[in-house]
Image (cartoon, rainbow, N blue to C red; front, side, top):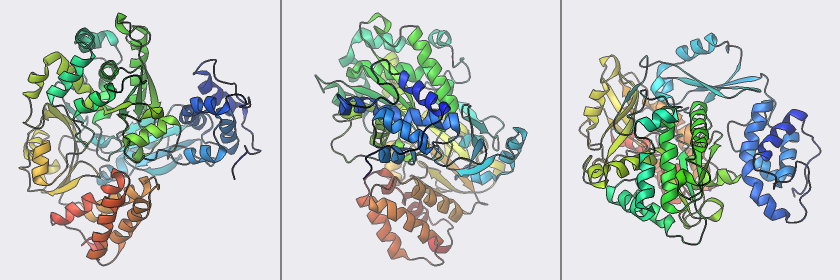
Length: 577
């Protein structure tokens, strides 16, 4: 049994990194090395959520998380050593072996970037002096509009993301109400944000009161933009009704769905919009604490959101007595560490708490038993930044845009073989063909073989099915998924079997391993695609087990793209034929 901290010791740099993280929570926390005696379990539970930030600090300081560093963390935070190791080993961005090179480069080889090969990214890395660095293939880095990207980790330095313009020279951002400030307003200037109406919605919210805010959100028909499309107002009301209990609000900015980059764009181009929107959500549901959980592959987004939080605090728009209202509320920024599964809301909550990012069984739901066991509102970034427009324009005006069941606009992530890749904001109800035409059509005017809607967990449609209405009801009628807004084009040169095989490996590698159907089933799908002949009955069984018995959406949707490609009659060879 794992009852003790091991004999390995941390070095001075590792100790200093951990002490900086622990010191950030204030004097009530015991110093590094102090034994947990009186009140130990309670005090340990109160500090365990520092485990993930401390692991990030160690990775940056030393380039890896050594046995001595893990021992230090286990002792300082009161976390069993085996559990500390289990958390560190869960995330892709933490190394548990000393790297051969102080610089590690993670090069995206996922479904969008692999369409353009490695020549462009190799040139960018060479220009940056990184040709001798240690390279590793990486799942999607969320820069699909650039047609290639790499994440660079250097010992002692902040992580950076290099982007390649393999598609358009500059990816497009076609703005509507949500993206109105993108590339037109300085993203780190609070004054610039306020000069364009920023924080006007928070003032309206405080003037009308929390109940009126929730009523407006409900009347607007706003639905979640992360993929589930759950009515936003219903979720807000469920949390607000938990009277007599402390509450949390969380912005889920861990978009890791291949082909998705909308939340990254919002955070990089308009970070104050997210901060204001989450503040409104906190006010509406009666929370005192908010969290923004950003995927670890988004260093620029983290920097800009962090700067926006600091500016908001300095202007008394966060902290004690927000905007003179007498209400106290603050937001903490948390970085993920390379785990697709943490986009699932309960896995994200576990990650914040300092546990492995494994989904929880539901019920209970986060609205009653969420972060630290308390009522918690979790919303996607795109969902949240719709709220100021609802309050300023009014729910009726908001609902007048879009369709009957799909109000407002939607952000569509165009990538792959499209002439002008980028982020497009259009009203719900636009057809797939009109959207693609808006983006310049197929790159080099080649025939369109297929379109992937919704990302790796989404569905393929044939290149001639361009009359699909892009709305919740339109997608349902067509038997497809809008998911996270991915629209990825594949021309006639693409080997879709290779694409599907990469998607299958993605699900296998990103499975948290908690449940047998997903842990084993995703590997069997990889093997099925590698087989020389098709076994239709086996795939049917795998599909049924994954959908019906997996704990969360990762396993439940692991075969969605493959089955949709088969139904569409797309060219697939080998075991997938």
